[in-house]
Length: 168
Image: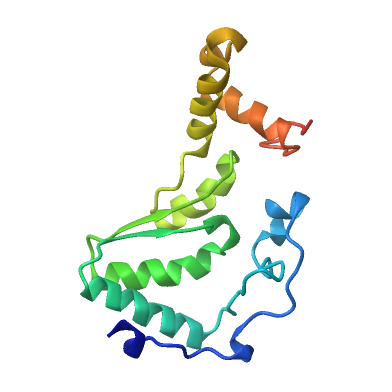
C-alpha cells in the first residue's frame, strides 16, 4: 500500500519556518521561491530526507503505471530543486512526460524551467489571448494585435512589468 511505503514521515523540523506573506510583487519576484505558505499551508525544507520521501512516492506512482507528471506552481520552485525530481523520473522511466505549470506572461520565467529541465510549461500568454478574444472579441483589436499584445495588456492590468515594459 502507498501509505505504508511513503506514509507520514515528516515532523516539524522538516518544514520551513517562518511563513512569509506572499502577495503583491513577491508573487513574481526573486522572493517567490521560499516561505510562501502564508500560514495556510506548509512548505517542506529542501533537504535529503524530503527529496528521498518525494522520490519514493514518485517511484510508487511509476510502479503503478503513471507516465506523466504535472508539477504545480513551478515558478515557486527553484529549477535546481525540480531538476532532482525530473532526473529521478527520467532515470526510472526514460519516456516519462513532465510538465510545469507556470502562470506568468513573462517569457523569461518560463525559460528558467523549459531550457534546463527540457520541460514544457503552461502557455499562459496564449491562455490570456484566448480569454481576451472570448471576452472582448475583435472589437478591441486584440485579435489583430496578437498573443503578445494580449499578454502585455493583461500584465499591465495586474501591475506587472514584463520584459522591461512598464506596469500600469
